[in-house]
Image 1 (cartoon, rainbow, N blue to C red):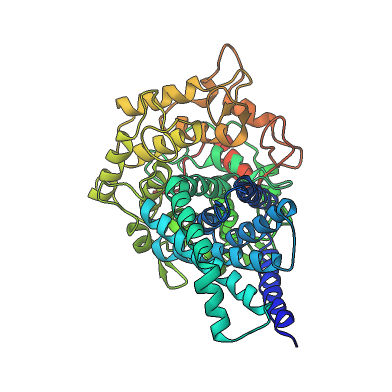
Image 2: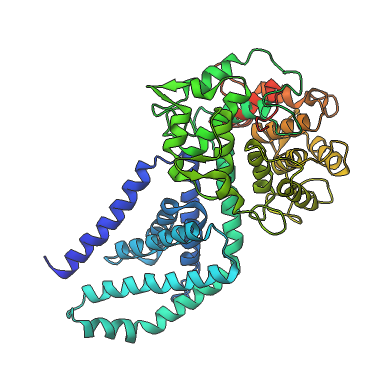
Length: 518
């Protein structure tokens, strides 16, 4: 076998392994869309700088995608980005090498994210971009060496240390500056995407879960799990419960939509929604496997505080011990994300859910950990009364305001406090004339944001049925309008998507019950 053929076979093997791994993961349509968009951005970024040789942002983009979303998205964005950009720049025998090299950049970002718990600063991420750029260009030097006439060590050193070195250094320097310019911001945005997908992935036919959850899982000041804090909007929740049961996979877990492969994300949300509606998730089985079986089998996929928080809450919903799973201490792992200022990972949403999870684990709301977390959350409130995904100063939105409001209440903040009143006013003011809530005031209403708002209002002691703008219907009425005859819940009036987690949130809201944490 010739050197070029042998090297091409090796590179092809790397690419095939990457695609097979991605297919085996059975990503949802929403994740595929996110990855495809990021790959297109990476390709366009490379093509935009075609006039400046070796100056391209694709290395920084691929690394940050892997860092924030994990190995398979990172690999795919790096590899597809190179392939797509070569549609303009020209394909050749080097294309598979480029795809493999920048796919490995995405994998390196995932390893970096796992080892650092995604806590790297701007300079550290920029240095990582420069280092991986050098590694990727070094792989291209290997390509040049394999297709050359001589395959001696001296020939390789001539390529790597001679003709290619200036270009490689420019590439590394450009990648450093691209990383310095946008890496932390892109990582935070993708972290938000990851968290949103945990709670609002749009798959075909499973939107009922979030709605269920929103209508049933209100984390607020409450004394016992499943205590009714508001009168149920509808006594018969059987259609939604039947729909969730029908969406269960053979391993006991849930996917983004009925028929899609299960993952820890959706299994966790389904467990919480079922429990909120009064159905014990541990009793729901498919092919002999329960929700709890799936949670235990998926424990190895947990990454970051959001996954840990959701798993603690899901275990609590199943009536199982929440301290650890599969030998891993969940509470200990979560507490490691606590920062000196009292926040968890410095983000509003993660801090709010840390409060929920620690309450589920039996931590007192008057203890120093939750008190400090609640105090930090209160300081993040914007002038308009709302909260943002990250921290104080970013634009407020309904989803994060509702979660932060519930976090304040679960950390001991009084319902009559100024922070609670301002957050409630923000939620009420965001209501549209159709009765629903948008993610951001002025936008289109959707089931997710409406469900979160209902949760926040119930936690604060407000009746969602009484929240009506100019005589419109209530948020509960809006949610009811999205429920299909089979019990699934559409994401919005203009969308046919029905994510599983949406049904869970809606069910919680319709049941008018608190989030099962205490």
